[in-house]
Image (cartoon, rainbow, N blue to C red):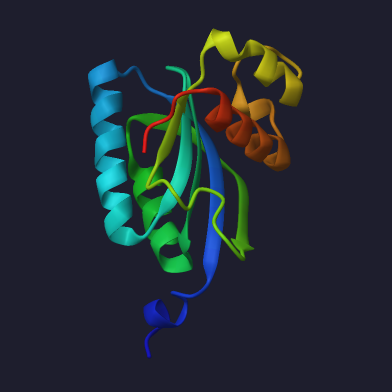
Length: 147
């Protein structure tokens, strides 16, 4: 049994934040559609929040699949200043029902941001790992999200 097969049963969760480079809504929609399709093929699930300035994303899957996707994320020129906020083994998926759940980080959610941060503006660099998880859960429950 090779290493890839051996770690297939080890689930991990990785959360990162990054600054977005200028992108149109069309590019974001294409990125989301591609991620959803690719993630199904790799058995990756997750949650993405985007507000034209920042990406906040959690991805879940086998250690190999998540590490492979992290390398692609690090090489992606659509964003910069990538910081991993949390990386850990998990016993079950938080986002198992979505290949990539998506919520927009809008001003309409200012009260939710303020609940988890020191500001009503969406700036995930100011959040702890636990705050990002709680924020993602609450946003996914309060907004219409994509499957």
